[in-house]
Image (tube, rainbow, N blue to C red; front, side):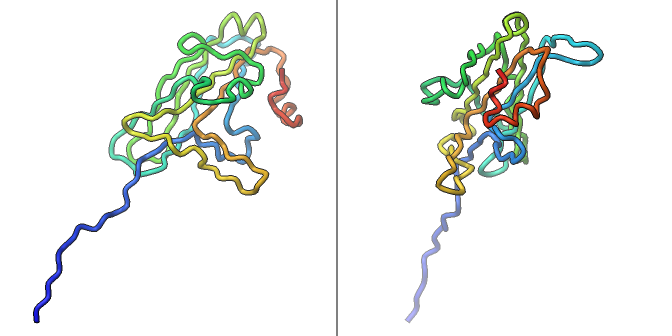
Length: 193
């Protein structure tokens, strides 16, 4: 008796690559947001015309040999149900008027990239003392899926999973801002207003 076997191709692990805002920051009590004062104190107090900020974004999936762009939009009710409450009473910044998205790249062979944003200092901020919020949301594109939103799983039943596709930048022009650590003595650091 002679026996033979068929050669079959084995399935290997494949996944869809995803990106999310890196909110695993133990030192920041609100890792899904940042606060930027558009004032400079180099010698004398002056308003900045604009400033650039970077927000870390992490890859979940395979590294690529080429740079890959991820897509970010201004969040609204169709993406985030409770967006009004997340604005904490601040007006929403207007894209291309109050802020611009400069770049959104995961570099080749890297697991982390940066979302680069330009914040613009308007008369509204300088004269009225308003605080604006840019609510940013990662959306699916040809390189990345966004169907995984709770990358920081709750560690206990009291913890809430984080929506790692949303990031908020609160920005303002305040000549008389108290030191940042004073705000964090409050239960809610957004009580600066």
